[in-house]
Image 1 (cartoon, rainbow, N blue to C red):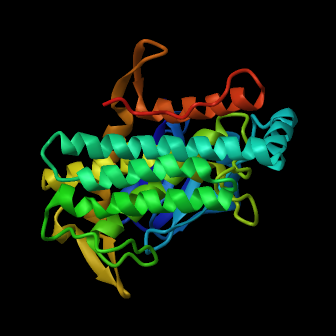
Image 2: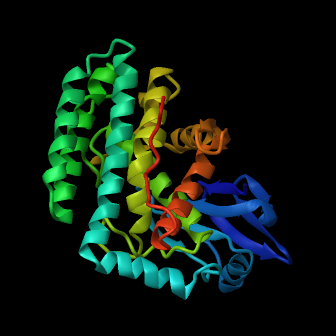
Image 3: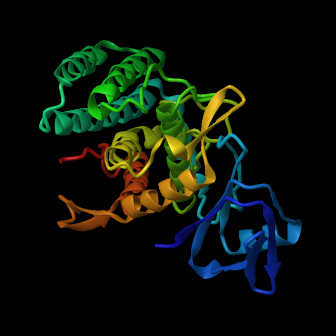
Length: 330
């Protein structure tokens, strides 16, 4: 698997012959282009057309985040694997209301299952999350009565709201209180961590989509409209509990992240550069973690699981095998 390169400093990203380098306050650092899948750029970085042409040639994606850690956009090189056939099949499954609903329902089902797995894991460690589990299980059962995508999304929103209410019980930490979900900007440290982790996951799934025949602009749960990409948001819902939330609980529980890793900015809370670097180091470790895949009967990394989820969607669109979302077993 190729690597993800993160750039937090400000400086210049340049091409030199057949390689790339970043020049910032810590000097010049070369980027191994043959081993790089994408660049995640958080700093104020200057670049030019020659560099973008080279990145396109090497199939390297650039994801940009602004000062407030919000994802702002991507340089998405010409899709080398895109096929007219797959785009037509995706459009067919989007245009057909019943087919679209079936896929959207699978995304919600997968997300809910993994949320419940997280809660049951912590219940087994004597965290009093039984009420949240009961509420979510009832919402999942009732969601079968939904007949439209907006109704389904309403259930999904209620499931996640009930789940977030359990965060304070799981963490039981005076410096990390959930309160309520706030995004732009996050109003506290816990919301800042959730937003940062979700943004990283969205872009990671987008990068994986680039290496399939799928078009990221056609989503099924998140409406395909004027939003540039939506399929990555759909797939990310399944993996948020497993990757973003479990990592968050671990970082706080082990006291790796503390209140000192955050700073107050323009009415909101952000991770400091040191906090972002610490998070990314652990995030990359999480993606490399392997689990036993029950169908393949071998160890598979979480990064690989993201790609495999997309391959399952391709098979669904081609009528080879009905899509079933990834469900954690631990």
